[in-house]
Image 1 (tube, one colour):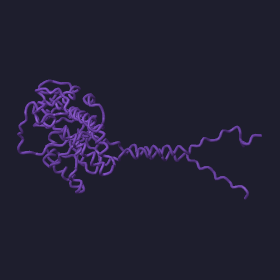
Image 2 (cartoon, chains in turn yellow, brown):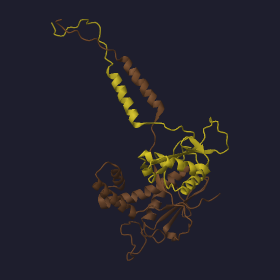
Image 3 (cartoon, chains in turn orange, yellow):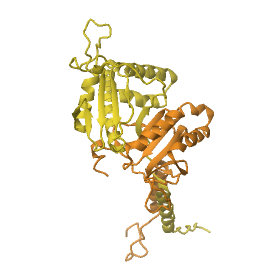
Image 4 (cartoon, one colour):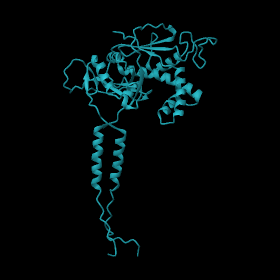
Length: 162
Length: 204
C-alpha cells in the first residue's frame, strides 16, 4: 500500500490560483512606478518629435511646461489661430506667454527659481514661426534655459510621421 | 481533540479580478511621460546685436519653408549634416606657431573652416514656415556632432565617454567625486563649447 492515499482517485485536485493575484499585483506595482498620473489636462494635440542626442529632464520640480500644438477638432474653441499654446491649464495667446510663464515661475519655491527650465512640448505639426515667437517671449522674461522635449527615436523619421 | 482540523482554503480567485481592476484603472489614468529632450540656452535679450565674426568661423545653416537644409550656400541632405558640422568644428585651421593653435583638433586644417573650436559658431536660420520637427532634427544633428567630439576627447583624456561622465554626475555620489567629475566635464566643455546662434528669422 502506498503511503500517499488519495481519498478520491478519480478527481484531479483543483489548481491553485492563489499566485495569480500576486502576479497581477507585481504588474500593477510596475505600472505605478514607471508612470505618472496626468496632472494636466491636455488641451492641444501633442505628438512630440523624435531625437536621439537627448539629455534627461530630471527634477521635475523646477520645470515649466509649455505645450504647443493644434487644437483637437472636437474642441469647442472658436478661433482662427490654428496653433495654440498651453501653460498650466489654459490656452494662452502669444503675448500672454510672458505673464503666465512668470506666474508659473513665481509658484516655484524661491531656491529653485534660479535653475528653472522651460520644457517646450511642441507638436510635430507646429511651424517654426510660433516657436520663434515663443522663444522671444521667454527671452523677454529671462527664462533662458529651454528644453525641446522629444521622444527618443530616429530623427530621420521625423518628417515621415506627419 | 486529538487532531487539529485544517482551516478551509480561502478562494483567492476573485483577488486576481480586483487586482486586474486596479491595474486597468492605472493603465487608463496614468501615462508614461517623456522626460528627455534637447537642452538649449537662449541668448540674453541684447540691445547690441552686432558682433564681428570672421566668415570662416561661422557655419551658416538655413532651413527653408520646404524643409530643405542649406549649409554654406549648398543644399545638403540631413544625413550628411553631422559629418559637415564635425569637420567644421574640429578643423583647427590656425598655424602651429599661433598661440591659439588647437592641439587636440584632428580636422583637416582647411583655410575656409573654423580656426579653433572655441571660435566656431554655428548659426541656424529658419523660415517661419519650416517645420518644428525638422528643426529639432537639425538641432539634434548639431548636438550629436558636439557630443561625438566631446566623447572623443573625453575618452582620450580620461578613458571614459563624455556622456558617461555627465550620467555619473547625476548619480548619487560623494561630494569630492562629484567635484572631480564636474571639473572633467567643464574641461571638455571648454574644449568644445557649444556656440549656436539663431539670428532673426527670414520672412518669406
